[in-house]
Length: 396
Image (cartoon, rainbow, N blue to C red; front, side, top):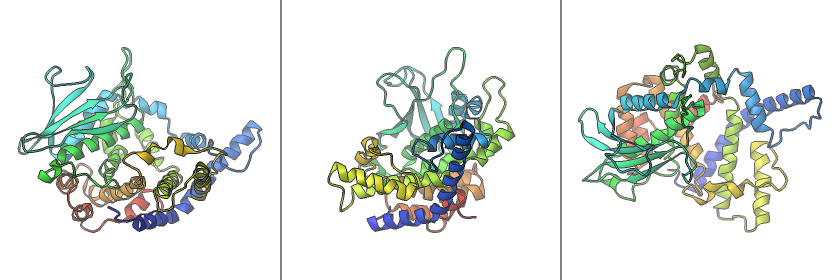
């Protein structure tokens, strides 16, 4: 979508400039927590946040906001989250899912489930999707979607969702952290993107969404996991069946954007690393790579790189389909915030008309034609970053 290195450079520079003040405030908040902690523990305070401090004090900040992640897990049993998520997608996009009986479909493991998808209004078949939810030896270790078969004139698309969510035990159901709920909702959005694509153009291997857009539809759908009405549907205390209490729910929503500017600066740092390495003048030696990390990390994230530490050794995105496109996560976040705020937040998160507009104007075109044109049609104007900045509390 971006079209050029210059457009990406301008996008990241503009975003960094707007995030820096809020990021500095986030930094100072964490630093004060560290200072107070050091005083309480009677240990020396070094007057800075180290790389190993940020996660710890970030969690402490969330606790101070009243968010108890372990207590919240009790309200998100896996089976309820999965079934309710599918209900929400069916209502929103005008689809009907029917689970196939074990033994009536090909499968690679007995735990894998398969669903047939139809358009509700016409009863036409759209395709199938597999759910492979639990970890096991030799299985892919992350959450991901695999588009197994593209639709064509003889059959619908077939997609697969792989996760590694905790399995239930005999005495206790599988309970999810809220972040796991968000991840499931996100990945299921990718399934819908693959199945809802239409037209002969999308049946070819050349019909691929731009890498800087492909995450936007699913990132937008993450917003549902922060809406009170949706959280009330998704939650069900595993012993009592009660919904998430208002006090706990409100604490979660209020804490949603804790440290968000600080975290966004880290994403910009990773995007810059990726662009530098794939740019016209990349580092040529291990020493130059180390120097690049040592320079960019504090300049953007405000946190020094530990001596000799080089996260490039484990930065898998540098060598997969996101190479030179890691910025796409931030680009897509901006687009997703705009789609949600402009249509769903204004007209209703479960408004079936908006859901169908989204399906037909954004998902159905798939990887064909100009994505910006599709978004402009859905939004009623060209995309903007205003909603993204407002959603992060950076613009009022």
